[in-house]
Image (tube, rainbow, N blue to C red):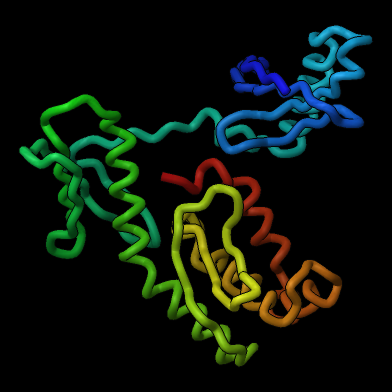
Length: 246
């Protein structure tokens, strides 16, 4: 298998595309976390040139953008954090106090109720923005874990009454939540960029998996009975997938 990185222009947006040539039956386009993935069968490529597949993918992506205008935000939005900047998450507003220190690793701690002190190493070569992002993720996981546990307990007692082994808050870009066969519920900390009622929906969604470990009609019936407008919540998550992030 071989793969190559290309860029496709979609109405002025330069979209990164990774082309993977492999043994498969048909050409496929998928939206990855950092780039679009175009998978091309080896057998087809022998009969056509790669530009033909890129043209097909470009047409497909343009049609997708027409239907979902913000679908490519994940590839164009890049947050940068600076001293005294306000950081909005979970209905809270924190002010970032970023300083250099003699520490060998980064440190983040909450001062008062709304000031996040971030200390960064003054020596060594590293990606400053990546470290700040990692520290903000770590803080948010710890800070909002009690909130997600409270929501899980509330909806579980009210609608499900199922045993739960654990609730965790992680940084996950592949999904907003998951429920394991061991009755462990995992949620992406990125959820706290979403409106509160959308977080409620994801909690109900994962709790419903304690009853139905699939996405059958029965599963969706359970979700709909609790939250009739759940499709609108899902749409918010789809449209803002790139925006709801650190």
